[in-house]
Length: 283
Image (cartoon, rainbow, N blue to C red; front, side, top):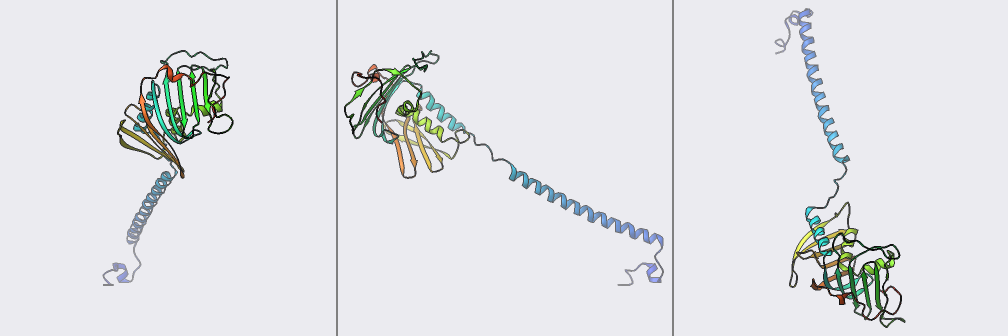
């Protein structure tokens, strides 16, 4: 076997001739090229893999955008909030009001209506009012007609336990007035939905459906953000039927008790004849 593997010159004991040397060099060069090409191919594969992994890890997370369902949900609520209605809600731990009943009435003016500024330069139009009656006897009434407001209040404790009402006065876009406005339940619910937004109407959303005995099929949107979560349920027309807000063990809720589309002038009158300049009702 050893003899057969040797070249003729090796069998004779002679030095290889030039032709054999050229053949050997050519074979050696071919082997080197093959090894080099294989090594280069492996390097290219490794480089491509590394680049792909780097690009995957370095890409920014996709921006959260509201789904078509969420957009439709919010649009339906906004359309409903621009209509006339009277709605009564049972509330529990609701903001500064705590527990009781709130009745909201509104008659928006048609789009394009020119609002006349009040003496403080604030301009608004339409007629909006609510009446809160607390479970402990506290009362707060808030009436906005155009750019002016009036209110009534009765505390359940302290010196002001008798109902008093104020004459219409200019609306001021201040914190105190903003707190009073939280009695307009559907608007307040939409504002809290905006507080939950991350890059739009966005994070940890979930839809469910329910059936109400009085208000029919409901669509409910659940939002979570950190330790807080809330669920808003609306009917087919977009009116808020229920809303529940959770923060740890604290639960705040509103539930629609009655609804009609026919507010009257009585809904925008103070409970008794106004007797003094405007003082914000105690909440």
